[in-house]
Amino acid sequence: MLYGIWFLVVTLGYFVKGAAGFGNSPIHTGIMALMMNNAELTPVDYVLTVPANIALTIKHRKYLVPKLWIPGAVITMLAVIPGVLLLKNMDSRALKVVFGFVIALLGADMLRRKDGQARPTPHWVTLALTAVSGVINGLFGIGVLLAAVMGRVIDDSRTLKANISAIFAAGNLVMLPVYLLTGLLTREVLLRALSLYPAMALGLFLGIRFAGKLDERMLRRCTAILLIACGLFLVLGNLN
Image 1 (cartoon, rainbow, N blue to C red):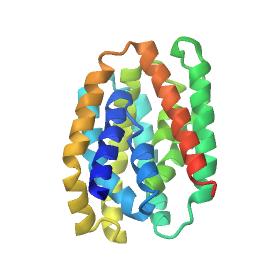
Image 2 (tube, helix red, strand yellow):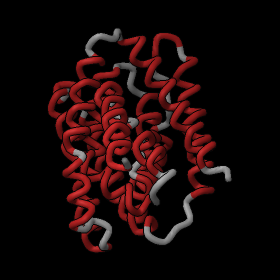
Image 3 (tube, one colour):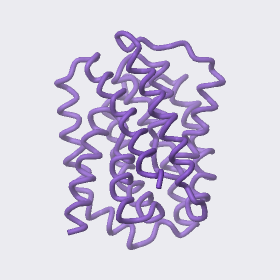
Image 4 (cartoon, rainbow, N blue to C red):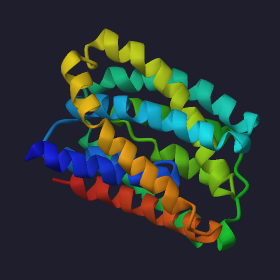
């Protein structure tokens, strides 16, 4: 029963990732956290998301912007380490509530902009929020803050997907040895993740196909709504 629910949740999460470039983790870990703890879920989602990030980066590689993804990748690679180390010892409920409010506000800001026009943002603000996103990614496996930040400076969904996927993939490279050293990535976790690979592949494939049927404005609107939904879900799920 639990595996069947898990399979459906992973399929849904990676359908969203295939369409928008992010969103798998809030759906996957957010729903499954009602039945399991984050220390069990985040490593499984990590193993699932590595090939997904690589696949999306390769598919949209011609939209990569070096001045965006390279600094973001370096900062994320450094920032995920404290996030992973905190995963084993921190009570994360209060942080998730604050994080959820931030994500919802950034999504609302993206939604209200006409035609998805990028909004000028100081470079240092982008870098600082990218660092915070890296810590959050290591702690919860959630990268929607990075998507929200990049959504303020990128006005094309394919460019957004390419660059955040490249940054996520870089962070994944650092998380592997840290997960191994902290004992979060075990044989049991690996087997669980491998058993869910068909769900990940199915969801990602359908999401990519679905994204191709949406126009740019509609996809960006859906991305903004997803950010708001993810933020509110995190808040409501951790208030009690």
